Image (cartoon, rainbow, N blue to C red):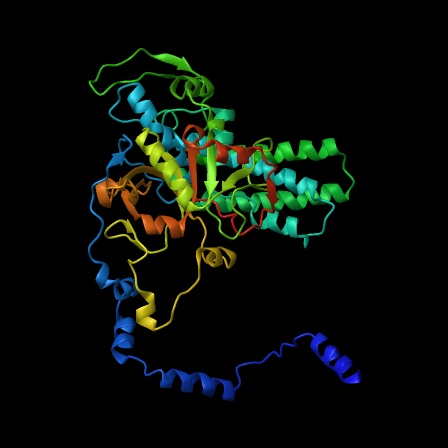
Length: 460
C-alpha cells in the first residue's frame, strides 16, 4: 500500500522546466550537429550573393496557370491604393463599380475612396476616445486599455467598416473628392493622429481622475474630435455635403446635371441593401458552422462589429461560383504575401520551395498557422472570375487588385484553387447565393471574441 501511495505522489509532481542558456557545451552540440548535416557549400555561396526569392523559386513549377477564365464578372479599369492601407475600401467599392458602369452605360467609373476614408478616420477617433472614457477607471496595464493605446487608429479595415460608412455617409464620385498626397500616402497622417489621440487619452484619464462629470468628459471629447477634423481637412480636403454631377456614357452622351447629397447619390446609383451581404470566414482554429463576432471591431460607435459565419473553404466555393455566374463580384481577403510570385502575378502554393533550400520541413496546417500568428488576412481584393474543369469544379480564380495597372491583365492576380484553400480567409457573398441551411446560422447568438483575437487582422 505504501508503494502505491509513493507512486501516486510521484506521478502527481508537476513537470519542471529547467531554464538553460547557450553554454559553450550547448553551442558545441549545435555546431557539431550543423557540421554533421553536411551543409551544401554551393547553396550557401548562392544564398550569400543571390536574392532569396530567386533562390527559392520553384523551377519545377514554371508552367503558370493560363489566362482563360470560364466565368467572369464585367468590370472596367484597375484602381490604385498607392502607399496606403485602404485596400478594404477599394475592394468594397470595386464590388459595386460594375453595377454603376452597367447602369449608366459608362466606359469607366470610380467612387471616392478619399471621401469614405475621411469619415473612417473621424469615426475611429471617436470610437477610440469613447473607449478611453469607458476604461478610465482601469490602470494603464489593463489589457483593454493596453490594446486601445496600441491600436489608437489605423487605415486598415474590413467589409463591415465599409457598410457602417456607406450606410451613414453615402457615396460620392471620385471627381467630387479626389485623392490627395496624404490619402495616397497615409503614413504621416496615421502617425500624427496616433500621437494626438494618445495624448488626448491621457488628458481624458486625468479628467476622470479629477472627477469631471460625464457631460464634461463628452464635451472634452468633442473638442478633441474638432482637432482631428481639422487635421483631416488639412490632409484630405473637406467632404462635400452637396454636389452637382452628371454621367457621361461611353458614347460621350452627357446626362443632365443633378444636385445630390452623398446619401441621395448612394440611393440612386446603388439600389442594394448592404444587409444582404454576408461575411464568411474559413478559420479552422474555431468550430465551423457557428456565428462569431469580434468585439470593438468596427469604425463607428453605433455601427456593427465584424461578424462572420465560420465555414470551410469547400463550402464557400459553390456560393462564390454562383455569385460570379450571376455577375456579382465579391469582397475577398487573404494572406497575400504567402507564395506570391509578383513577376507572374500568381498565388500558388508551389511558387517557392523553401524546404529544399534548407532541408527543413514546413509542416504547419492552416489551423496551426492561425494559432501561432504565422498567417492571417492581410489584404482585401475583389473576386471577379473563376475557371472550372469539365465537371465545373474550380481550378483557379481571378482577383481584381488595387495596386495599379502593372502585372497580369492590367493589375489582376491569378489564384490557384489550392492556394484558395490555404490562404483565403474571408469572402462577402450576397445572401441570394447562400443555401438556406447556412443562412440559418445567422439566427444563432454570435460567439463574442475579444479585440486581441488572432483573427483581428485588418486588410491593408
